[in-house]
Image (cartoon, rainbow, N blue to C red):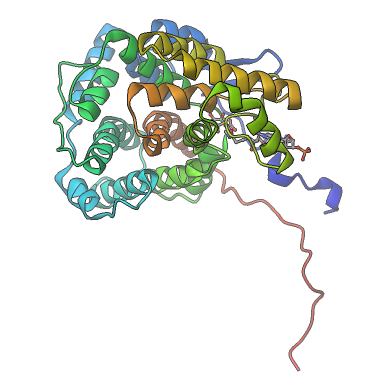
Amino acid sequence: MTETEIRKGLAGVVVDTTAISKVNPETNSLLYRGYPVQELAAKCTFEEVAYLLWHGELPDEKQLAEFEQFERAHRHLDPVVKRVVDELPESAHPMDVVRTAVSVIGASDPSTPDDSETANLDKATRLFAQLPAIVAYDQRRRRGEHLVEPRDDLGYSANFLHMTFGEVPEEVVVSAFDVSMILYAEHSFNASTFTARVITSTLSDLYSAVVGGIGALKGPLHGGANEAVMHIFDEIGSADRAVAWLEESLAAKRKIMGFGHRVYKNGDSRVPTMKASLDTLIAHYERPDLGELYDTLEAAMTERKGILPNLDYPSGPAYHLMGFDTLTFTPLFVASRVTGWTAHIIEQLRANALIRPLSSYVGSEERHLP
Ligand SMILES: CC(=O)SCCNC(=O)CCNC(=O)[C@H](O)C(C)(C)COP(=O)(O)OP(=O)(O)OC[C@H]1O[C@@H](n2cnc3c(N)ncnc32)[C@H](O)[C@@H]1OP(=O)(O)O
Ligand SMILES: O=C([O-])CC(=O)C(=O)O
């Protein structure tokens, strides 16, 4: 293999087919099972979108009722998981807590070795139902607050917020949160999904693949960017400092988190929808200062580098306004993306081939011991 054939980071390499989502940078669009994500965000709940990703079609009334009943029945934090989480130091990043919790669930589940589609769908739905309890409880314990039990009279997002904050916020907040969950759910062969597919390709189990996905998502070049955006906002402080801050950061060759994308070069298809949700939150919480900082930094980055925001840019400040601690932002991404990861795990198993690329050796020539 010659050096010119090497594609660092697999950039531009097509490694397999998928019927789950289509990211189209030319038309700046994203389809889940054929549906534009903007339409899904406007007309569906996150539960319906999760069902769509797993089953390929939106649920009818009866299917949705059955799905919701199952999801609501599995929302309680498993006592074993709670004990393990309680043992973890608060210095552990919440992503490490979520990763460990999923590992514990996998080690405790007798159906872990069963890789049939029925068993994997069941595991995926149970993880989907349990992740809000893990994420919410971890934030609460760090604040010295007690566990809040789930409510089975609430939809996924209202219940998630109830378990985190002990009350259900106004509809405008629940709706913005639900939109963020829908937008984060799936994005073809991104780094964490590909990780999950690589692990699955060895015929390892679904939980191991999800744990690997969480590890890949944690990095600031991927899901960790939503958290990093908020750190940037805190560092800048106010809109009048944004341009100077950007100049200094670019001069220091810093990557500006929340900007740029491997696939989209003319803007992330999901940003306008999430920005609209952020704007409603800015109005609701009366925080125009945050909007000014957002707009000023975006305009300066576009003018200076021509690099546009990705989904993490509006999501970070949106989660901040909802009241989440900054370190909880990427675990929220996990709670959503578990739907996409598990849909891909199931798809990978349907037509599996071990994922094992080649490398070009550049080490020392063959040599021998004296
Ligand atoms: C939900 C998600 O996971 S979306 C992604 C979230 N990640 C971030 O927001 C992190 C910040 N962004 C980045 O680091 C990058 O844009 C990535 C990793 C997302 C995509 O990167 P790649 O496709 O590998 O492009 P690459 O990093 O090579 O960037 C190309 C050029 O644009 C520059 N660039 C890209 N993004 C940024 C950025 N955010 N800030 C400053 N410069 C940037 C690079 O420095 C590089 O410049 P050069 O050619 O002069 O060296
Ligand atoms: O597609 C990517 O590379 C990253 C991304 O936006 C996502 O996973 O949502």
